Amino acid sequence: MSKWFIEGNEIEDGETKNTIFIFPYAGGGVAPFRKWGEFFKDSKLYIVQYPGRENRFPEKAIDDINELVGELFEAIRMFDFKVPYYFFGHSMGTKVVYELALKIKESDLVNPNGVIISAGRAPCFKAPNPIYNLDDENFIEGLRRYEGTPIEILDNKELINIFLPTLRADFTIDENYLDQNYKKIDSDILGLMGDADQEMSLEELQKWQDYTTRKFTYRYIEGKHMFVNTSSNDVIKEIKKFIEINEDKRIYN
Image (tube, rainbow, N blue to C red; front, side):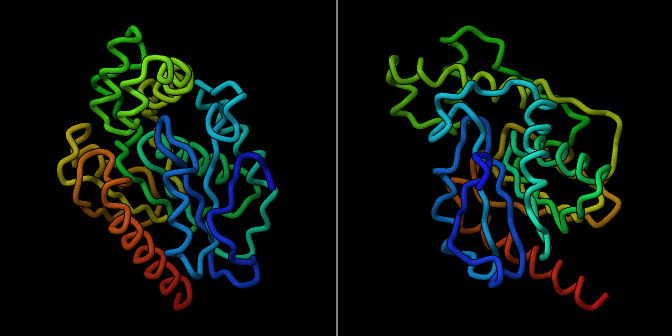
């Protein structure tokens, strides 16, 4: 198995109806999604592990989205997509998912059946209040705003200093990203947004409808920007519902 993909459950390839690839948020790794596997009995789960964290901590984090997506594209080519597959990305992960889906579209690989955009503004909108370029003290305060980094780490100066290079690299990708070419992917898109998310607007989510040749829908999830952690059960329900509808449509078309 590639160092880029960690298995999220133990379903054998012959027993799965589809495959889901999870792309974490800035600063995130496999750990927050470990428990998801038990909720997907018919789906094979793979969680993307970016360099600079957890089992890839010794590696330098990547701060360029083209380099990151290029590496992921080469890694994902190893999969034999005999069943439909789906991408799920949260926050920074939505940028990675979109760019990877575009690269796949331009290749000889099969397109994802669906893409779940979770807490991500459309590519034509740049982050309005970036923190990646602030000094360490203000950058750390900015991290508190997102509520994605554990307080225990933020409050421990020695510990946070260890993670700062990786966090800053991720936020550089996330907040520097802007694409106004409006290239469309050939996948259905489900948009998810926290009903109390102050980091983005509904307009910024709905604009994703201009980035697909297929259907776009969206749903609210209870919570702020990091609802993927605080309301994970609701997120999982929406993913499963989206896949079920998508699979039924594929069978009867």
